[in-house]
Amino acid sequence: MPKKSIDMCNGPLFSNVVRYTVPIILTGLLQLLFTAADLVVVGQFCGSASVGAVGATNSIINLITNLFIGLSVGAGVTVAQGLGAGDDEVVRRTVHTAIPLAVVSGLLLTGVGIFAAPIFLRWMNTPQEFIHLSILYVQVYFGGIVSTMVYNYGASILRAAGDSRSPLIFLMIAGGVNVALNVFFVTAFRMDVAGVALATALSQTLSAVLVLRALSHRTDACRLDWRHMRLEGRVLLRMLRIGLPAGIQGSMFSISNVMIQSSVNDFGPVAVAGYSAAGSLEGFVYVSMNALHQTALNFVGQNVGAANYKRVRQVMNTCVASVTVIGVVMAGLLIVCGRPLLGLYISDSPQAIEYGMTRLLFIGTAYFLCGAMDVITGGIRGLGASVAPMLITVLGVCGMRLVWIWFALPLMPTLEMIYLSYPISWLLTTVAQWITYRLILRRRDPEGGLRRGRV
Image (cartoon, rainbow, N blue to C red):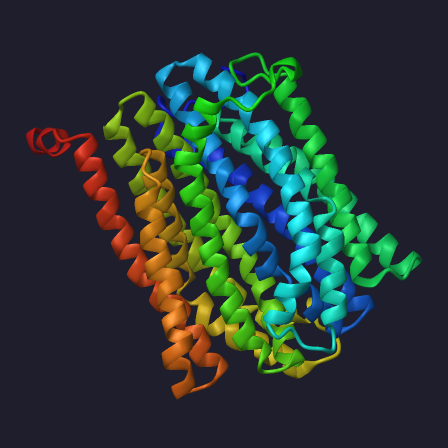
């Protein structure tokens, strides 16, 4: 095992989970800083209209990209289970299928993003004050989406192999480049939102190059040999079986967020600016919690491959408890420090800051439920089941929010009413996911309950 990799199947569990998860948290925070830096720079140098223009694109970008990013989950689970079972051939074939798939996915997304995003932005009732800026940002952003796909697939493979440090190092480098280019393009060339989008695309290209280099220099079954890259049908189908439902779930999740964004857009550009800034701040809490989703996914995947179901249970209990603590503490700090933090994004509209605080108060207090929901979903996928968590999330989160917008919101058309849909949908879905996880685990390990009874 390479020295950077953590043994997921043996050794002290909690310390290994912490050592593995902390770099993922820091990596997620750096990724989020790409967008946060965009908002901060345009907010300070270009005004709240540019903040709203960039923020209004988040849900549409996620909608378009989540399907293909979800396929990287299939690559990660397949690699993790193969490593746990000691099947090096499956691991090698998965690695050499995943990278070409990332390139193909990126090329498809480039066309869709450049030509279809403007249609979606108009359909979402993006305020006319800045819709032209939103379209420009999206088109430049998708010009570099191939690099984003390659990085995500490569990082997924590294994490499945127990190496969560390398993606962190790569994004530390790329993140510094991104911030510097943001300021340079906006202040020196007056490129506004196009400058921050270009900076993000260039920095993501750097991170993709670094992750490919890391895979090429590995000494285990995850080593990437450029001569062997090809789309192998059998491996691709296995990745699709796990990753496609994850991608569909992400896309459906984004559809519900697009509907919510559209509802918020009806309250005007100032509300959109506050909503976008608060959403960016909440993202720091989300990526910290979502790191436990990836931990559960890969730790469970390797232990399922090794048929160590006792450790699977221990992994899930540890991850759910940890994500709850992280969600409560971080969201609490965010609410307490909300106004000065929102002021980093918005320098010309106190009313927009108040709109942002409304979102933080309604959503942040229950954010730990979102983390628990994601961790349980990751554990179920690590068990090799991907359709069940997709259906539960689509019905519990996406379906519930759409019903809320269509039927509950007209009765009380306020931003507070929109935000209530978040905690309610998280609670319902978390309970359903936990019941599903227990049923699937009992089916995989029917003697587990008897063993615990004898102990």
